[in-house]
Amino acid sequence: MQLFDSHCHLDRVELDAFDNDFDRFMQTAYLESVTQMLCVAISPASWGGMTELVAPYLADNIERPDDRPEVYLSYGLHPTDEAGTVIPAEDLVAAVRDSRHAGAIVAMGETGLDYFHCEQGERWQHDRFVAHIEAAKTLKKPVIIHTRGAPGDTLDVLERENAEDCGGVMHCFAEDWETARRALDLGFYISFSGIVTFKSAAALREVARNVPGDRLLVETDSPYLSPVPYRGKPNNPIRVRHVAEVLADVRGETLPEMAARTRENTQRWLGIAEA
Image (cartoon, rainbow, N blue to C red; front, top):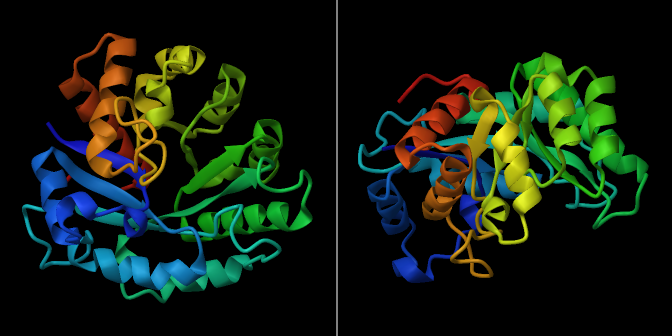
């Protein structure tokens, strides 16, 4: 069995349980069947440090150890970071193309709208969102969408900007079926995190039951949103298994079947060859 954590922040994972040794953590993840990860950047200030941290494990590194997970990257500016800042699409494109590890950067974002942490209708947040979509279309890479308190406006932007031309994923999905349906109509994927394991998430599990099997992804969003039975504790990619287990149960599948399905879906979404 091989699991693909489709969204994590490896530069923020707590390493206390691994003697503060990142390589030991990565080896443990591999032994726990997490063989691939998408590491997502949330601000330009973190792009360089995050990339260097995971460089030994990147998919474009020919010296990558065989007994460690294969890591891919996404570059973006999170909707709640650096309030007021808008990075032009051409600067996002240049950052990807000029990177030493451009071959491992397979997506843009995360980006989107967040009205929980920011005032509704902030122009800079919308402009930033559009710039990411433009960059994704130029680079022919999918876009990772964060939405909180703004599902309708988020989908309106995606539809207006023809985001189906680049495709993408609704990451850490916690919305209703209508939101999922609109995203699916754009050709987007739906990714579920530890939230789907929470006792209070019965409605979300019903959404997960109805998502087409070829559009379903699993993630941890590490170090956030640990699944049950670790809720409230720092998260890490090893726990993606618990998300997959709940989805398998909801959909009447085995864990190995769900692992294979979501791994294949993530590879297809990112346009990468099977490892």
